Structures are given as structure tokens and as C-alpha cells.
Amino acid sequence: MRVLVINSGSSSIKYQLLEPVSGAVAASGMVSRIGEPVEPGSPTVEHEADGRTLAHDGPIPEHATGLRVVFELFARSGHDLTGEGLYAVGHRVVHGGEVFYRPTLVTDAVLTSIDELSALAPLHNPANVIGIESARRLLPAVPQVAVFDTAFFHGLPDAAKTYAIDAKVAAAHGIRRYGFHGTSHEYVSGQVAELLGRDAAAVNQIVLHLGNGASASAIRGGRAVDTSMGLTPLEGLVMGTRSGDLDPGIIGHLMRTADFDIDAIDLLLNRNSGLKGLSGVNDFRELQRLIDTGDQAARLAYEVYIHRLRHYIGAYLIDLGEVHAITFTAGVGENSPQVRADASAGLSRFGIGVDADLNTAKSRAARYISPPDAEIPVLVVPTNEELAIARAAAALVTASA
Image 1: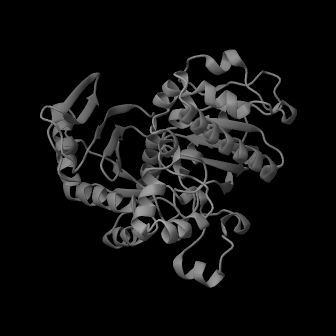
Image 2: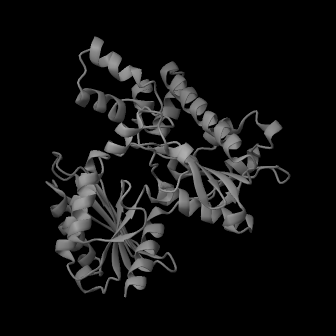
């Protein structure tokens, strides 16, 4: 049984061919700079299979072309997808709104509904739709399954999901906290329960998904009870290029005093804020390099990032009351000992701390980084959204057979 997982972004496509039971990856890759000019000889598709890497040079004008190139590279590497006997194709879809809160077989009507939800995720859902359409054309006989980033947070308590604005306006326009990175939060929280040797229903935990996009969640007994992202993926933690929390009055202020229109504000808050807005860079490794050279803007960006992160840890400690684990995951969470140490610093009175040696030890495994006698274990658990999507897609196709 093999499932092809596709994550179609605005200018890229990430993909994996994997076995959902074992998690074994047969091939993976990425299409980059879709619709952008590229230098001659510059690879826009990199494909890894069976220990070797294949590449495609030259421009990729649109997503359908990108997927066709990917299928050609699969065939060249010995995995002809049209004859592979794929069990399913699983698609990451960012926003499911109130409509979709479990994995869903894609039909024409479902695809139309996903497209209509683009008003809630204009940077993400249109690209997700294009990826699904392209895959359906290339693999018309293979079940296509949409797995939604918002699904894990669909059942948030009313007090956590409700914004304090006019209730009629909110209802008319679907305004509530939806939350994102749900596939990662759900997967990681399940891994945490296994690592603790406890049933997920008996574990209260805080999960910190820290990548270029970043989010925090409070999970009680396997169910999310709060999350940092909201109607869109803009709210919450400081991110690579996104502002996270800010006074909504800033928007009106910029419109009145700086002649910003809505597109300029959207560009500012989603593309030119966060670490990039404060320091000029959004890559955490480059940020650390600048800090090491004494760059004060980079230092401030880092301090704002940590301040906001600690703010959410503290809030969720109170939300949950009793916490059995705090977990770092995703690119920064898994790879930055400094972030983990600074986020946990000075919290020993709450039973939280990290062991310096365990925290800095190089490992790709799920592991404890807190002292053995810590009241609240601090963990690093690698996320695997592709595997989670593959398993969800396979389970749905099996149940529907």
C-alpha cells in the first residue's frame, strides 16, 4: 500500500510517496519557484528516490506543469505512478472552515467548497485547489483525499474559539478561531502520549510547532482546547514573515495615516513582518548568525520571538491547570537548543526546565530534554505531517471501500 502525499503551496509543491503503515518513504521532493523566472541551469524540481537525486532545470510556469515533471521524475527513478497501484493521494488543505473537519474524499462538489473557502485563506486554499485539480487529471482512477489543517481544532470550546465582536457579523462571515498546523499538533500529541507511556486521553500537554510558520496548542486528554492561530494563520506567535498577535487598531491607523489599502496591509503583515520585518531575515539560522555578529535588530527580533512564545506557554499552563508535557516540534523547535532553553528559562518554580546536555545532544529521535526529576517533562518530538496525511487518507479509502 502506497500513498502519494501532496502539499501544494502558492509557489511550490512538496510531495512524498510513502507506506502509511510502516512510514517508509519511497520517494520525495519539491517543486520550487512556480511561476517565477529562473536562471538557466537552475534546478526547480529536486526528486530523491532509492538513494539518488534527480533534478529538473528550467522554469515551471504553473502547478500542472510542475506535477507533470514530478511524474516524469518518478518514472525515471523506477516509480511509475500511473502503474504503481497507488492506494490514494492525500492532499494537505489549509482551511476547512466549518464545513470540513475530517478527512474527505474529493469530489467536484468538495473541490468547489474548498475553493469557496479561499476567502478565509487566500494565500493557501487556491494553491491547494490547483494541486488537487492537477493530481485528479493525472491520476483519474486513484481516490483523492483532502486532509485539513484546521480539522484538529474544529471542536475548540466556545470560549476559546469565539471572538468578542458582534455575534451576527461573526456568524454571517464565518469568523471564529479555526487554528492551523492541526495535522502536526495531532500527530505530535499522539507521539508524546506514546513516549510518556500513557493513554492520550490521560495526557494534558502543550505543543509548540515552531517553523517558519509557528503555532502553539493546549491539548487536554487528546482534544485541543486552545490554539494560538485564529481565523487565519496570521494570529499568535511571531513567525518568519508573519506578525502574529497585534493590536487590530494598527490596521485602521495605517489606512488613515499611511494610505495603506487592504492589499498593502496584507502584504505587510503576512510577508514583511515577523522576524523578517524586525531583522531583515526570516531564516532562523541566518538570524542566529546576525546575532553572533552583534546585530541589535536581530537580537531584538529574537527577544520578541521568545517573549511571545513564553507568553503562550504561561497562558496554556493556566488553561490546562495540570500539564504532563511541553513539546517542541517543527524546524526551529526540533533544531534550536537555544530557543528551547530560552523559552524554558526561569520556570523551575513551575516544574519546567531543560537539561543542558540533553538539550544540546544531536538526535533526530523523539526524546526528553528535561532533567529526570522534572515535574513537567520537556520533550522534542519530530513532526511528520506527511505520514499523518498518508494514514488519514488510507484509513478513509479503506473505510469507504
